Image 1 (cartoon, helix red, strand yellow):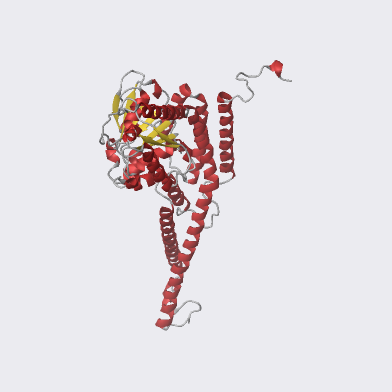
Image 2 (tube, rainbow, N blue to C red):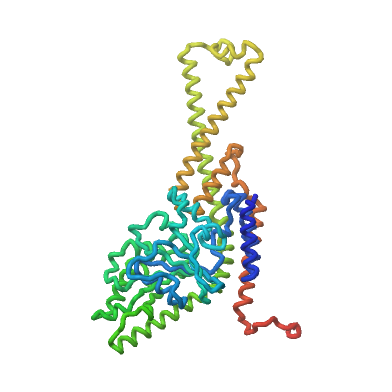
Length: 487
């Protein structure tokens, strides 16, 4: 059953999408069908939705170590001073920047993001509380919302991250960093050319480069060596670039584009005219390429959302359901093994009682020391109920122990996040006391669920075709073909 508050938020999302991209309103309905399957399996709670696992607005995040020029880069892109800049760390929060048509800039607290399904930090306070108890109430210490009237922000969200230092970073901050990398359509990773020894940043490079190049969406990461104007003062400026390229290669980045830029407004003067012309040409070309890639995000966003819909639907059937089956099989074997141990132990105790009490079976199959049960005709019924109740209690104790063992296995096998939480919730649903251990299929899985997932995948393919009709015209025609031209 869907939570009422969630329905209200989904209605608000549909209302905004109706004005901005009506095609995505239909996608919301398809996500709703996917949610029903996931709730049936236990992968989602009644107040959760797969919709909240993606960003519905085009999202670009800017990551990098302290003083890498992230804020300066953003101000240059937006043509206005939105972010504070400086030679030292000037910001310790994740700043979400979006458009404000009122022509003014505002700074809003993190709660503005935490309660709005449209933004990438929806319910982030709950996530922080799970990784660091007590931090959920300090959401304003981690994130904030800024608005700007820059036209370049129309239909776009930027995220400026605090300076990244893998050694000193807290668990909550790393959690937020990983979260925005997952949700972003484009991730710009900036490094500071003024640091001549990139090897000293080994841990930071490992997290921002080595941990991203093997991702399925690794093509959305762009690596940028910023503030290159400083290198013009070196005797051999190309050595600065070479040192960074070697450092990135050590982390596995041996292919792909590596940009070199600096801010025209904050640049150091370059006296050598030929060197200045060479640096400016390279800077302008790379900035143009980066800005063009950023502008493409608006179109790519719709494809990304539709792609996520299909990916999530296929993951449920191809990954999550087999994983739940595997958990149930492990749980079932564990419960039966513990049943054997528990009831075998009880049988041994009874056998020991018979042997050491020395009472023969003089009354048939009942030893003398149990004869009192049958002295009166009414006594055997409560005794039988007591035995059955005790046996049931021991069996459910074995089930509980087996469930705890499987839960520990899941916690070790999966990092903290939606997948682990979903599997833990599915485990609890499938091991409920009223569920038989002999159920071979997960709760909520059957022919109806398969058909629903198949219809969701079909929906996503139709949405891609609709997007292609809007943005691609392989026939060379951008208008519907007149009926008179159809043979």
